[in-house]
Image 1 (cartoon, rainbow, N blue to C red):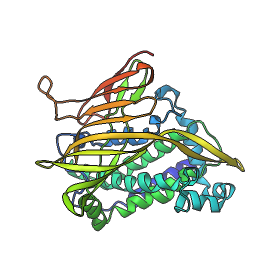
Image 2 (cartoon, rainbow, N blue to C red):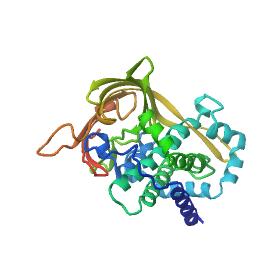
Image 3 (cartoon, rainbow, N blue to C red):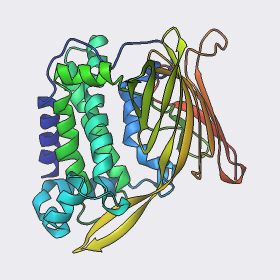
Length: 359
């Protein structure tokens, strides 16, 4: 049953990806964050995004992926029974429609931003990547890529829970598939890619071999729109496991210096359990950032927050600093109790390498 369910999900993912010729989200720029875009980096950054939360350990050996996958597939296999246990009113009001602004009942917010808009753009971006690099079946490859990261994302998030769980039901069946379908439309893709300058500014994911941890990862997106009375300036919305609002100031030659501040996810918290079905929310903290980009490809950023692992984080992307004839990306972050993390990233590599001091 589970195998058939996975095939059904993959088929549905592929069916909404149609051959498109224009590229709105991938331009093969050899510098900045766009130089890191490939199926491997998307899988790592998006599939393991939840490990940024203090609720989850970044030690990859502690992830109970089998438990999480079983939980997700069991719930996807019988969605109506799980929703019935959770309550249809609660499901529709918390997961589907924005009926409440209370943090305990606003699970719909990441569903629309991350799974619908972000996931939809990822599907279109991967099609453009595979098409640009000459793959014979770009729609098939893009569908497999986004389906894989969505399933892993849900499994990692639910790796220690067995029971009724409506979150992956809403995420995958409604918002991930709905977003992928939406972004097959050229008018929609042009609106988000051109009018709103939507793109991804992913982390520079790196593996620490000494502690087997994943560092500096995360899938982030931006939207920008010209200020009505000063169109050279742009309003900025930066979102992922955070939501930051700010302003982008032109710096010449297609470059922008941006400032943004807002909230970020600190950790997950169970609100209640009804009929065995749990409701989960997030605890929020603050975050602020300074970003420098060229033609929508992020060159460098500095982010400060009250997160445990990253009080301060600096990212410099490939194409900015030359080193022995090539130009890797690099990052440095400081956390609680003098925790120090640093690393390198490389274009077209799914992960870089990181150093982490002993605590």
